[in-house]
Length: 349
Image (cartoon, rainbow, N blue to C red; front, side, top):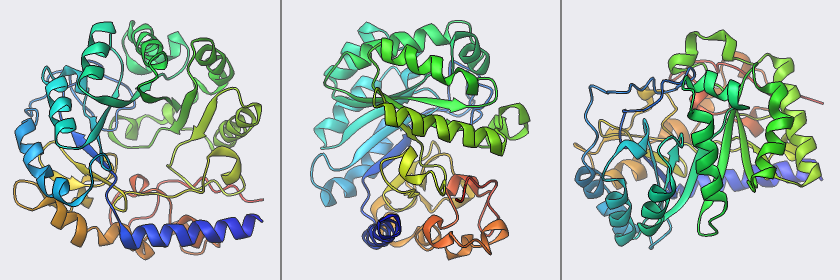
């Protein structure tokens, strides 16, 4: 049965790639951030020397999508930096709803209080992701702020109690919080939080030179086993992220087989207008710029580097018998075109 399911997943992935309908568009609206996290992939600053993107510019770029896609079929995920630092965030969201787009945010939760919650939900907020990276001392160490844990937990309590929102909490797993995962699970459940995703930390941005944040292969397997055991319990909806193919753990750690959708269903508009896929992939994979190109034209006619991944069969992937299932892993683990993958999480039987 497993072999047949893997075959079906490859057929599904092939069809999705050929159709490549855009369903999820990140908007990197700011590089400003109110934290200075040790693992930040964007290396954002509290006071960025790059201005926020004017919302009018982004909205204009969306016009072709509005003509192509039916209402509510494309989700705009607003990220940064910290999107809650934008004073016009609710106005942006309200305008996105008026133009037929669902929208959500990715936030550290520092500024998400009851007043902001009411404001954003009234503006049409439909989804939200908040980070909680361990118990209080560990989370605050990673986020480098003494109030970060309590602020994030406050945000999660507000969100989990509002049935209008799709939400999850994400945890970046590293050596300091790996052993805390069972306690963190109980904390989330006790606070009514039912949706949880685990990531590892990619060696990009600030984390590129911080080996303390990287898990060993043994630790990665310990994390995957924790996910598998927690899913069997059924007390909280826990998943491994979309970052890697896990071999024998695939059917135990997520709802469907690994599928990196970067450039296939997922796109992004970066702060300077560059058009790419998920914001964590290397900036050299940009495919155009909204100040020079039509966003929909770029989406339709470029991104070949992400839709034909035969070039990823290099380095350790060159002789891998699982390449047809994995296709070389997630795009954010490639430092550039033709470059070998930074790490592999394929655990064979």
